[in-house]
Length: 546
Image: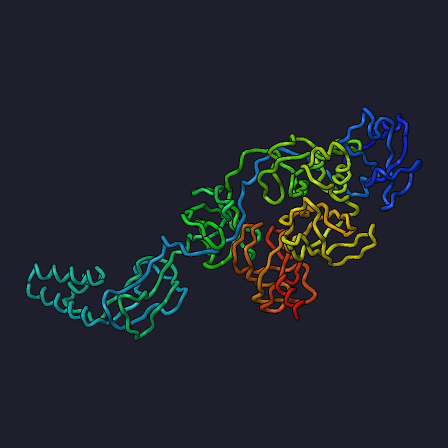
């Protein structure tokens, strides 16, 4: 919080004229008490009443009791450079620079297969298989015949022909020394590594257009990741990258950005990035998913505040300054880049200023009753309804054209409302775009001219990331889920399939094939986990239709 003692001492030296309700300065009493909303009345001192020369019409004065009731919290504006690190996910892939594919140059039949299983380790020069090819056997016989005749030119031509047909230099030398034609041609491993593709079997007929085997050296691997368009300017070739695996939370792999692909995916609006990591112990296996952190290029320093401190009305953005001694002022600001947790303030705020990050809606609504605050607002034909209650809830549906939202909100004691789901109209100036289906919001509720309850102010609650997807696998009674999820822009994640731990375990596990909404958090190691599961909007709509 912030200190109140000094302000109270100074205030007690002034004469108290009357007490007013925090939410309605027209509600006046000659003695302390409660407002119709159950809030403590606050004193108005001599010289602070409306119209007094010393009164600051832009400032709201609240007592310590009211501040505690509102749950006011403050944070300091500071200069910082946002947007440094880029967080995303990727999958491990073979290093194509260390991968070889095995083909033959003439048709034939496998007659001596040495490598018979995927994943087998081979060394460079090891025999992979032998095969019989009538044409190669005939060429081998011609080469031996030329050698026996002592025909130097023909022998050199025969040797070149065998080499052109794919016979190894080693086997050609054996033929020359033994003067015996080779019935079967040996194929050697062009490099050491692991067999990652096997397309042959003993006795199989093979052709030049077939890939018979693929070998890859897994001592280094690629990781293919996607970054969103808005993050692409912060990624450069050669910058540092970190990879983490869910099943090895204590280990971090360090690599570099090897290549940035030239085209943006038109569907996901993401840019593909290739990373290179050393993998001497082969812990990074192809097709594994990894959490990726790219060092990124930081933006220029700017004044930043917690994202939840910014009040967005659709017509303007503002923050509430904490001036000390229970005094607050709402000021307009120009908002810049936001990383989801902090927001740049380009104009209207200095670093070091104290801003209200929780409870600012009630303070802002009180300030809106002041004449000076009215001057700050954009011109509007009708005054905005007064906020009479504040609550938090989850957005279920948004009708931008009809300017309504459906919200499941927490209990509102001041109105005598329990927790429930209901539709709200939006007051003038409240932008429907401020609501995201599945997102949590803090709402200021008031009444319009017809007496209907409407949303007067709205602000996303402290950052919480939600996603939607289809359950592919359920393990351990629902404690572990494999989910194919939609893109999650807040995390820079494209569509993909991932394993998640669910904490706490659900009372009833979702069914395989069910589409769910899920909230993401982090475990002690910083890995993403599911912290809440709900029915998706599509599932809920289907249930209503039935």
